[in-house]
Image 1 (tube, rainbow, N blue to C red):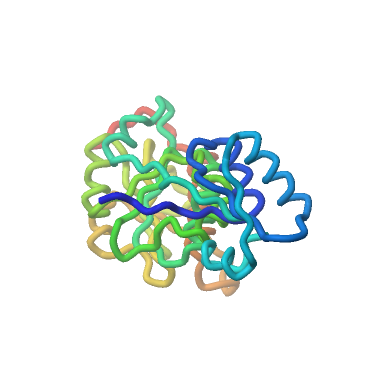
Image 2: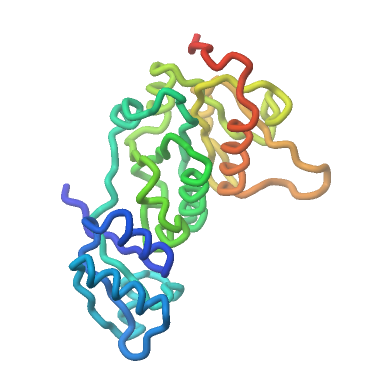
Length: 254
């Protein structure tokens, strides 16, 4: 099925889209009338790249962006390139950075923030299910702040099967769990690994959790907070795996 165009909004995200993937940008929309510096710079860049620029009123721009927080800039782009899981695995470098799997996230801001952390912390990719999960909405793209142009992405039909496929490819599957049997920063974590982060409130579903090799908890000060949201947990796990790799980086999946 042909995918519909997507929309990227916000000064930073639009600039990154124009700079790193100009061939994806179909049209730039700006507010009619007075332009601030960010809008003027984006217009000049778009025109230099041959990207059409169209002025809309604020209401129309908000409709396209699906948010009022568009900073007077919205880019219509061709759909974000998505890989199959096999292609994503095949594209991994020899260093085998951790791959993130997102189990049923619903909040587009959390989704976008996770993509941004994945780009900043060098994740090998982000995988999420087609159904019952948030997609690449304008709000998610804005929160991602340009990460859509950087991080390999794969959308799968069944996340539990994706976990199994990664294990068959030699990855250890580690699920974020507040009651995990391993503690981040204390216990050695096997590599290479994929990190499974669950939905807000619900966590990783039992069927997916059953497929994982271990459950990893993030230590939290007693009485401070009861839990962390998905985007914060994903960032902490990614960083923790980077700074605290296993003693045997060449350990193969049993």
